[in-house]
Image (cartoon, rainbow, N blue to C red):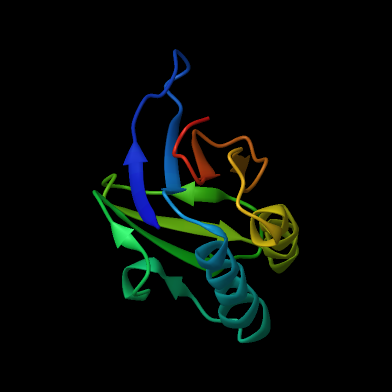
Length: 126
């Protein structure tokens, strides 16, 4: 599984933090980490500390927040995903199809009016 940031993906100056290049087994591991670390233990999940994720040009830290803010960054190198527990529970359900079998599709992991989207895509495309 690889993690990267793509700036200005469209004419609206929107950007994407993307988890890509993975199979079913890594999708399961990622889903389970969100469940255990964030939802159950109420702690942050720093993706740079996960052995099966290769950080290409950025790092992402997922954590609980009082409101759903989405992905934020001041330097386009370190990103923070600030979501409520309910949003992470929804994210788990969005990840489930990738945990059942290998898929070719993609999924945005939240639907928030934010200039940075969070893309989960086995093939890296959208």
